Length: 328
Ligand SMILES: Nc1ncnc2c1ncn2[C@@H]1O[C@H](COP(=O)(O)OP(=O)(O)O)[C@@H](O)[C@H]1O
Ligand SMILES: [Mg+2]
Image 1 (tube, rainbow, N blue to C red):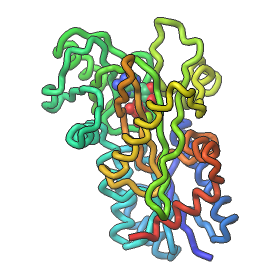
Image 2: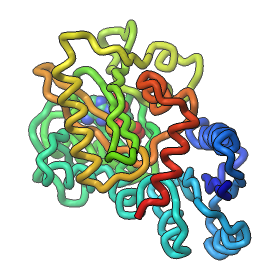
Image 3: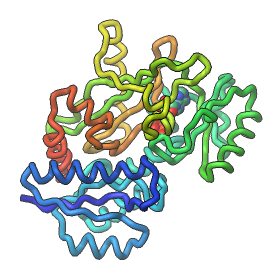
């Protein structure tokens, strides 16, 4: 029996669904830990680093299960938790600090993807990355360092001609959201994601999931925005579904997605569990949108669905993730 401390986001009472979801994960993982015969305890990770250190030391865990997704509401600060666990020299689940830091910064991730020869849509930031500007006529504006579709709505898609128009729209969006944003060439096409799970014989690539946009009116962009992910009863929530069955004509595409996801795992030095998000353009080319280190482990989210489809019990996967935490 091991003592497992579940370190999680300090979710404020007035948090949005995207943050409240962390508590659903805490409950599911506590149950899994109990059924694996270990002893779970929980601790919210707050801004007071000294208090975090004392409480973690008091607990004396054998392994920390890291579910810290945001700090002070910001996804950009999630690597503070792993940095502190590195400092305490405690084994923890999922990705290490470098991968957490890089993958929660989308433009930096894209730079590494390009250098690693993996296709990711052209993009520009306001901090001098306009060299990636290609005159795509449609751009998608999104926060550089947030996750879970935070800040994404119908207004993210920009029909723009020329660099200046994109830069102006970016400035406006940043001001409105209070977050650094970048613009990415919009990929009008199908959407897939691939989940990955550590194993003692290297990483296991789970079956691809496609996100289907059902009955979207022609003028509405098919994107997995905040409403589609979190606002129950909204049109977007009700009309986006996950499909894990791959049609025979998509087998080659599915193989290519698996191959790219695996390349990402190695390129970013991912650990434990991860998910790579893709759009596939009209000519069948897959483009990586982002790499999710420590994706959501809620029983109703994509990772658990992929586990289920692959015939891996949720509790067993939690056991594998814990086991991986003990590897060097
Ligand atoms: N360049 C793009 N082209 C088309 N759709 C996009 C693009 N970027 C993001 N999206 C849509 O927005 C969703 C969220 O974007 P993503 O980059 O995965 O960020 P998040 O971290 O919020 O999940 C995607 O699942 C996709 O539906
Ligand atoms: Mg995503």
